[in-house]
Structure formats: C-alpha cells, structure tokens
Image 1 (cartoon, rainbow, N blue to C red):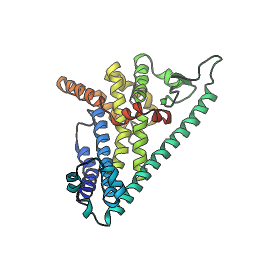
Image 2 (image 1 turned 120 degrees about the vertical axis):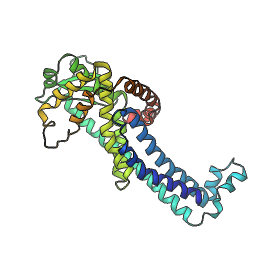
Image 3 (image 1 turned 30 degrees about the horizontal axis):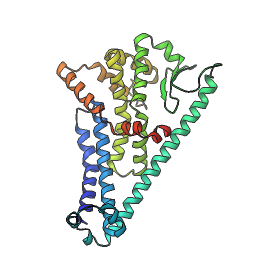
Image 4 (image 1 turned 90 degrees about the vertical axis):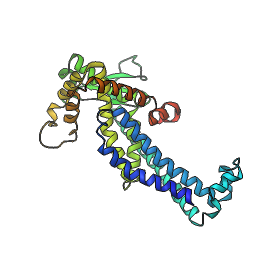
Length: 311
C-alpha cells in the first residue's frame, strides 16, 4: 500500500501547496497563457495522482484487476509494488477514489448541460431579437447585432458559434477600438476558453473543500480575460485595447470606489497601459508561443469529436 499512499500524499501536497505558490508568483499577469497552461498541468497532476492511486489500490485488492493492469509485466515489477501486502485498506481506497472520479464526471456533465441550456435560451432570444433574413444560413459563424442601450459584446459558443454585439457598443466604439473588442471575443473562441471555465466550475462545485479546485476556477475567470486582452493587443496595440475596455465599461461603475462584478477591469486596463521593456516582451513572446503549443483542455476538445459536439 506504500505506492498508492505515496501517490495520494503527492496529490494532496500539490492540491494544497500549488495554489499558494502560484498566488505568490508575479509572472502570471505578464504571462497569462503560460499561467493557464501551468494551472491545467497542476490540476491534471492532482487528478492523475488520484487515478493512479485508485488503479494500484484496485490491483492490490482484486486479482482480476491486477491481471489486467500487470498482465504483461515481469514478476519483479509486480513484486516491486508489494501489492500483496496492501491489506484491507486497498479495496476501500479504490472504491472511494472511484466514487470521486464518478462524481467529477457527473459534475462536468451537469456543468456542460447547464451551459448548453443557457446557450439554448440565449440562441432562442437571439432568434427573437435578431431573426434570420430570408435565405440566410443558420450554421457557421455569424455576427449578430442586437438593439441595446448598454454597450456589450460576447461570444456565444456551440456548433454554430456567434459573435454578438449591441448597437450601443457599435455607437460607442469606432474603428480600431471596435476591432480590438471583437478580437478579444474571438480570442476566447479560438482558445476554447469556455471549456476551461466548464472544467474549473465542475471541479470547484464538486469538491468545494479542495483548495486547488477553488483557486483553479477563480484564476481561470481572470486569466482567460488577460489572455484574450493580449490576443487583441498583439493585433491592434495595447493602448487601443485598453481604451476599448474603458469605453465598454465606463458606465458600469467599475472605475469607482464601490466593488462591482467587473472589478477586475481597472487592473486589466492598468496592465495594458504598462508597457513591458523590450527584453521582457521578447521573453513573453517565447514563453507564450511555447505554452500555446500544449494547452491541455483545448487540445482535448480539438481531438475528441464528442467534446466539440457537447460544446
């Protein structure tokens, strides 16, 4: 039982210590894409430790499972794990961890189902407020303009993703500022940030007492916005993107003393208006390019067709 216990201990230490270490890091705001990747790796490591501990515990408790897991392994490998000395705790550990895995899957299915229901309601609302013209296609990406007194823009993911902009946003933002706003929303869609938010919400709601999952959800909501800001600023400039954020949010009270749901907007504007030095900018570009090669969740969504359909 030493190896499964060691794996559980490693997962527990990662779940407790990793959020504290990442909270102290001053590079996350400068490198949001890298930070997103690191957070995904941390959570994946915790889940992998639990999955491996469950597998080895089940192999120690039941001969049938051991035959499947170590069927082709040499005898010395099986003896190195000391599965025969696991005791009666092996079965209980395997069952508890298996229940945790099933609960995680159920929470993810619930979160995705809720998201699909919300999207279905919003799409129905879009059809009422912005009906399709005769002969207009109902599939594929399309820009939807809604009558509205508040300047807003959002990306509605799904099989037929849509970029929605209100007329108030079109009146207030002109030229490159409007382009920067649209590029920000397109950045969310290209990186499949919606799936990062789904996974983090499912884990945080399913295991509210686990620090790493609560911190994962909070950081995902913040970092995806910073990453989308960077995508827009690379195309249209940091100043233009910051001014677009100000124009979009100046009537919502986010720049006042009282806290609002968009309280992070002033920090995002300050970040965009603080230009990095040349060496830092080159370093950021290299790190961001490297991290963008292996994002965990977007890669899964890309290569697993079932996930694309659910999204």
